[in-house]
Image (cartoon, rainbow, N blue to C red):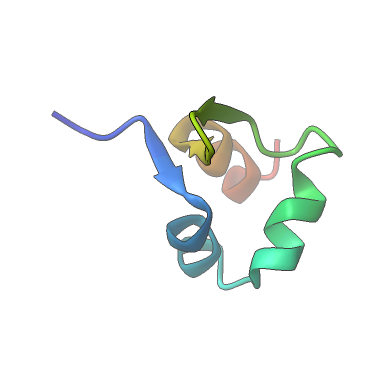
Length: 54
């Protein structure tokens, strides 16, 4: 089964960006997140959309 979320660090590595840039994309609505306890996880689908330029 393919994961549906990624950590902030994994997202930063996948996009070749820093953590600060990832956190900046979240309020812009370019990355969708889910909160689990204290963790912020990024939806893989939103990472793919960002890479595709949609």
